[in-house]
Length: 612
Ligand code: OXD
Ligand code: MN
Image 1 (cartoon, protein in one colour):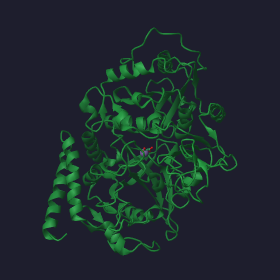
Image 2: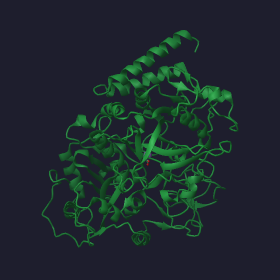
Image 3: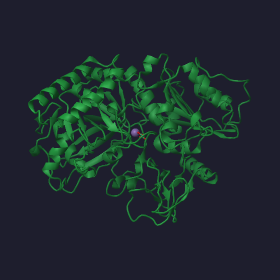
Image 4: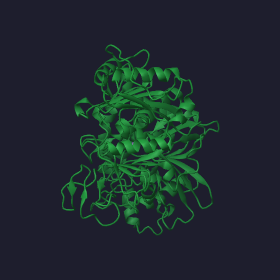
């Protein structure tokens, strides 16, 4: 609700009694008042971010049945939330970018005219908080004091959202202290309404730095600092202001010599970003450590030293529970052992949580994510495939000592990864920045449960940003290309695929901690000290460049995981065609030409190997 674009209102009513506002900021007070007049809550509560407040809101959520208290001896400070079964993932079809023109949003986004969106959602929001409490949640995205940090304020009628925001962001007084009297804050208005999927809209107004989200309580739709501000609005602001908002984790890789190399990696949702960010190197890599800076979002800008510096704007992890265990991600298991909100996992009779793929024996009985009795014989899953844990990053035993550094960390390597059972090799290094942008732009991945829709089909997901880029994707690639001119020492760019399978359907690469072997090559290449072989897809490790000792992986499997399968590449390049056609108006020429170059090279290869 900007001063120029206000939603229609009926006769203003008296503002409901306000908890004492925590700030004299006139613009913030006026906007909160405007939202209160529109939604007419019984009560307005300003969140200060204190421990005492967290305890009070948690207690309240338990009495209202929003949270279930878990076994506090096993899981101190942990609670379970069950969402409405129709509200368990991001819904791309209900997500809109509301720019003045349709072209600005691009073919990659659903578009609604701002006036129409304000009118439509305004009508739904009118009186929507009657009988309810409105929480005013001021928050910082990024380490306080960082030149890259941004302030947002989310107004929500959901205590679950307020509590999650308290974990995922630096919330409360710290944000108000940074904002002071400025009017430069993201205005987020969220209301769960009656969770009717027909009345579910997540609308972004990048030109107003505003987000309106109605009809969903699910993380990606409702925790407005995350996907909505940090990625969709963030990517828009990044293009205007000369920085980059990316769907990337950030890690510090420490070598036995004590050198730490920072790597940022983009993977589509539910493809193992959190596991990679928390990797524990295998036995054989004695003296190596991986430190987590962030697991989902990365804001980067060129520093005065010519390097690209990154911060993690978040303060917690909103991770996928199924498949997480002490073998796949011991750090996540330790991180979520306390002060964690679980969403849509199973509940055991002794007040513990359970999900498919958790350690230990499968419980003989439990209550499933929908609150129904469950046994191992049940046909349905105990935990929803997109069930989540929201855990504070300070619980992470391997949290990077630089995670709160306002300057951020200098990035030496950028990695793009997808979930591909065929075609894409285990690891490839781009020849140069533009080629790296091409590798990111042509990324495809098999869909997962993180968004509603069919699971397991390959879709183009450039830079893992398809659902999150707040403007035209071709212009976004152009922004990536332009950034090269502001970075004298650009990071090296890589592509990885942990998920390739052999003809027998077996994964060729063990993944998880063994990804350290690929990471080491990446780090060494970033410093210009490891060998490689040139292929038409980029530089790849030779057998001798790649440390497989102690992995149990055969060289044959690695060769197969790296193999350039010519017929599969022909299909891949054909599959990219529709995306390139859709974005033809703004696709940078360099990216188009690199694709044509690759097509020509593949054709020549096929002529040389007609039997392939
Ligand atoms: C997430 C997602 O929740 O990408 O991080 O869906
Ligand atoms: Mn994500």
